[in-house]
Length: 106
Ligand SMILES: [Zn+2]
Image (cartoon, rainbow, N blue to C red; front, side, top):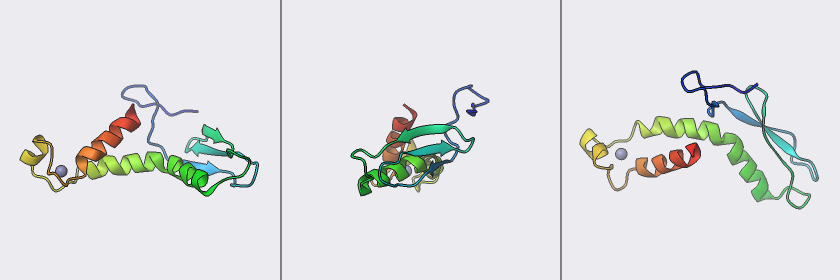
């Protein structure tokens, strides 16, 4: 059963996901959330798993963990309050991180 945010009632996106299955030729793998729900099921594009397809599946499975880590990291940049209010230092990662978080949130 899907988890829902107690605040807004929407789906909880930040539960860990894992890959279920092996990257064997012709076999689909699933990404499963921590409640056991299937997030997605993917078949190899040409019948066999290419290295880039496997890498992408691993990134997808890590997405909730990466998003949580990114949201934590954004709070810890070295910019001062004034620098944060003016858009952060030029070499600060936070503006790019906020774009990535917004992309993930839709
Ligand atoms: Zn910053």
